[in-house]
Length: 536
Image (cartoon, rainbow, N blue to C red; front, side):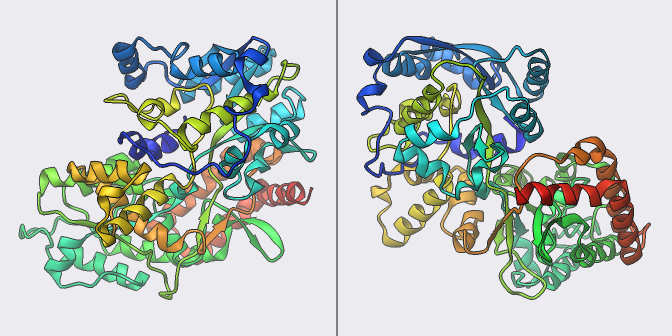
């Protein structure tokens, strides 16, 4: 599993109970007579999964119960209910798995059913005719519950696995709200300096200035910074760029075409602001050589008062308390240049796709397995303490050969907690709301910071999703030119943008020159290719 998606799921695997979605009365994998083990031919499939067999929770499950990845409650469920046996042919963590998959693709030695994490690999498999068309069997066999989860953010979730109008992969749905960027601020510093919460980017700049110049930590030294920045600022400062309707990681619709957000002129103003903040000493002078983990050390040490980041950065913010027990973090609705509500660009999130090797018998069994999977976690009578996590074993939901999460699981938990606190009905909480609230009552600071009633990331999500969301204009694989020249094109972008922020390159002309060079390197051709693919 990709690192960021795994980190996004940490909040989920920390609790003993998770949320449920009601079955809308449709066909499920457990009630259809044709899906029972007695009525189905016994069959064994080889599987490929991006799953670390050495994960500490995999070891805990075996120690506590004797269950292994190849023989656990999930594989036994599929055997008992569907007469399907699982034989793992490829099983390793993300980096190794992607490498093994590419070798298997080259040799033609693919498992029967396997996970694909890279859109470029998916594109290659579809073009080579190496995997089964899955759209028709999904339409026929998927339960209403499964369809409600997979299609909750529209059928565009199938775009990356669609070729010549046919669907070839099953999306492993995850919460798209993981893509939010939030502004985290030391409220105790705001209060000490008599500052209001920011509503505009000008407010953010003024707060950063005060955090540097007015000794918010009270040690009498000029040793604090206003805003965290690191070498991956395109990702980690997304919320600041969004304030100017600049979208560095997204394909957007503009002037009747799909275009790369990072080369649009809206990028110039936030870059100029960052250049100004850099020159005035509000940012870390060494940011260009620091990844996010290294740069956040200043936050943890109590020397930086603001940062942008996803909701799971609560785990990092919590470490500040070890150095300053009075530290108080909040998140606020993202400030914008105008003060108007921000537009939030999101990709419809999936943790890759499950595909079926061409010629595999009974390909519909993948959908039947998924029906059965979601019924255990999100059906009418879920047993979360068995199927999601149990005792001190976290992430049992992930130890299945197939998996997916209800994308509303986090937001629904926050909404339920907020309502229950307001109504004084917390004892009646169920599902993910109960699980998270139990953790909060036990003193779990990070869970409270993420999902609590107010001043939390999901308080902002609740007020903005989906009304302020702009879905990415293109969700598919890299174009041929991007595959061939993408690394050199990206190096140009990173190098130039970093130089602009550091004041080594003039913002206006330097940006325009960068765009011109990017287009010459292949950007113009990539844009044409992407638009041609979108038009199909």
